[in-house]
Image (spheres, rainbow over the protein chains, first blue to last red):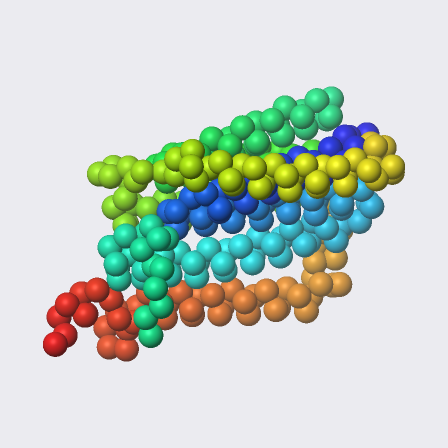
Length: 101
Length: 176
């Protein structure tokens, strides 16, 4: 027997909202991406816990898909960060506040 | 035994994540995040997912975080300038909002009467895992592989130089 499911949910909830606070508070594009990573990992813990709760392997497979999705997201978003830093010489999010077609 | 380990690892992961999101230097944040991911990998192992634990270390801590470090060092942000992080004026409302949302979430979780029972021990063998992944979810695996291909093409398109590249600051300064 391991811990109750509610403790796993509370743990992943705290972790999710830590990432959420990072996305809201930080203005560095790299730190915003790190916050997104933390949130995605919290969701992965929930999926693995649900997999153990129902004794089915499906939750773990969803964690694998989540990792693949995260890899794609990180590669695209870091390429965009490099492009933005080449464009304005900064990665502070406030510098990109105007639309310019 | 597993329960005590879970609580220790959960505290480690939360502490490392808290240190990570409050750092001003992105390099320090990435190092703390690698620490949190190692703790998370052990939590995955306790929850009966050894393959997910291995891939957490290999993909997240090994590949994605090193990619972050490459980008940070390529942009030359790390040693020369430590950017000013958000102060209390910016953290205050964020902490209040996140705490309210987290409190509501925890209240909802604790309101569930069936959530207090300990979940049984579980272990997904690699055979079972692989059979489900490539049998029931075979179509999803192909869709995910297409998604990775599109991401690679998109990253190449955004980052390429030469004719047809996206406009940058040097181009605008050079052109009339």
